[in-house]
Length: 155
Ligand SMILES: [Zn+2]
Image 1: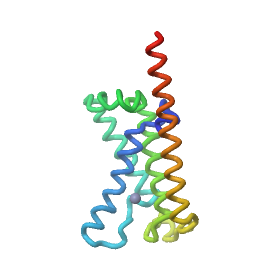
Image 2: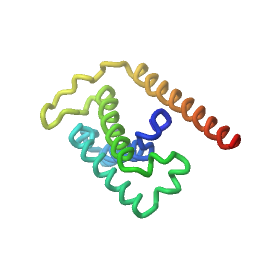
Image 3: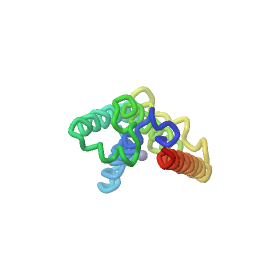
Image 4: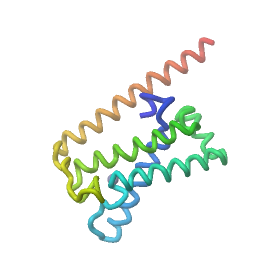
């Protein structure tokens, strides 16, 4: 994400929001609780998780914790708008992809218990789609980093 639109999407925010949402699943798996995907795997819960993560990252930014990460992931990790956009995109894409993949996700709860996207893509296609997105993002990241490196050497 950050490699494609580095000034607008905070990569750290995107990743940490995804991790925070899946902590819910991990806790439920470890406790043998079903459904595994609950509140944080709804658009309402994921949005709240994104807002919480954006606030935490904003606090970390104020405490200068994130500055070392900015050298790795670019300056988008240091501004409010990319943090908010990255957190929200991470949250909503997480719910979207998990809705396709997992039977126990109710993405529109509390408005609906249904999940119309379940099985709309086969597991193979879904994983290939994610892999393609990763490869495209990696290639764009490498090209951009190479261009930046070359530009810095020529100045
Ligand atoms: Zn998940």
